[in-house]
Image (cartoon, rainbow, N blue to C red):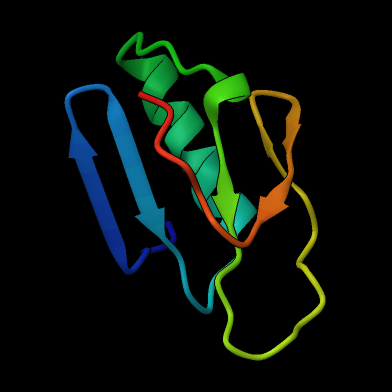
Length: 79
């Protein structure tokens, strides 16, 4: 099982900060957890940030419940 650096959950919002491990592996673990506890997640409201001071090529696209989530430099709170 992978460990991630930071997790924050507040009511119906979840934030993960992942560094130096495969982000898709963490997303898969989160999907399993949601299914186990019957938590509904809306991939259409999901966002993935790629903050960087230097210009990097974006990592591979992440998939949340079989939907591709585009990378963004800034994430907006969707409510």
